Amino acid sequence: MADYDAIIIGTGQAGPALARRLAAAGWKVAIVERKLFGGTCINTGCTPTKTLVASAYAAYLARRAADYGVAIGGNVAVDMKAVKARKDAVVGASRSGLERSLKTLPNCTVYEGHARFAGPKEVRVGDEVLKSDKIFINVGTRPLVPPIPGLDQVPYFTNSSMVDVDFLPPHLVVLGGSYVGLEFAQAYRRFGSEVTVIEQAPHLIAREDEDVSQAIADILKDEGIDVRVNSKVLEVAKQGNNVAVTVETAGTKSQVVGSHLLLAIGRRPNTDDLGLDKAGIATDPRGSIQVDDQLRTNVPGIWALGDCNGRGAFTHTAWNDFEIVAANLLDNDARRVSDRINAYALYTDPPLGRAGMTAAEVRKSGRPALIATMAMEDVSRAYEKGETRGFMKILVDRESKQILGASLLGLAGDEVIHCILDLMYAKAPATVMQRAMHIHPTVSEFVPTMLGDLVPLQ
Image (cartoon, rainbow, N blue to C red; front, top):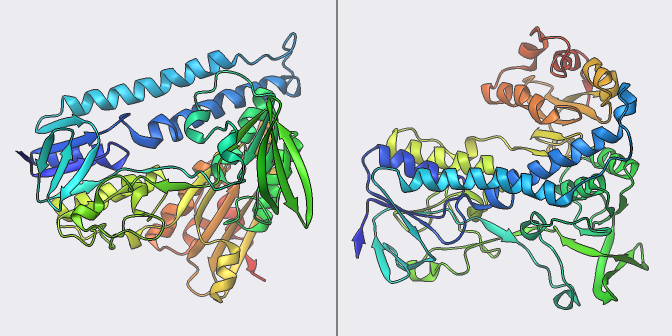
């Protein structure tokens, strides 16, 4: 049995960063990885998908070259093997760099294998038992495979397997009209596939306001993507070399036949094979490990970080989990999960940057609020770049004048959102930004302009 000051299970976004902080503080650390270093983000999430999105954008822009007065001879061809090779190179460099940094980190021992609890202070990895008074779980999530009749009889992709495709699917059918599904849908349409998106909810990305959802749907439809909302999948079946998906929309059944099927309808925590019962660790009905505001589980000395705790589903929330735990353990700084503001992005083109509340959430809260909107076609930088799709929306508390939330669908929306997010963290009134002088020509320069045109939210 090997004794450590800390055991970290998983090398996703939170685990390695915590290992470095603890090791630098003189702690003897063990970190365990059962498969690929870097977790979802590096291997099957952010890094590969955004690399693929970049290749798809290059193809899209090449086809639009004439709009900019640039002549490209012949048809624009996409070499999917080269696209995958580029993705593999980016992912490989990130993964190997992380693995190397952990294996050469002083005071840190790397174990490769499946970790399972043998008790509240013991973790078994293969034939070895590791012991510590402090254990940190950072095991992430995996794609959810729904109980759709016939699904066990047809081949399908998830986000994990889709990133390894090196060919062009003739017709990709995507089940799920949210973040993962829409990014793949647009990318593969731009690569040259016919694409159909099937979403059960009344509109895409159901957590967003309907005007945002509709604008995104219109953008995808304009690129030739068949978007079907309010459509329940009844069954799937093989039809020759294809996959037939039977859906029900407004009481009417129809069939979508595609060459390939992508499941993008959710995630589930990787907690069912950790022996959590041996340590007495509580989970919710979805399998997420229950934690308090400082990410402690119900068992003293055990924390859960990242997607597996159900308190966030993004790389940046996992990184913030690390910061919260490290601050409490090492810095005497009582940081909490509840201190953070909900923020994320959808990496379609144009992207959606989001912070805080939606208009629907503000209305439901009953608090008096103000709103400002601006079409991206009125933003000079967007007009100059020929990328005018989308709009921006900001919500402000009518009494405190603090920003409640924002939805920025348009050029650089995923970057511009941060100037709003920072003001929200500062708890400063919107007048601070309204009076700021931003640089021209940028997208950000129109945020102060919008804040000067607030009207009551109806």
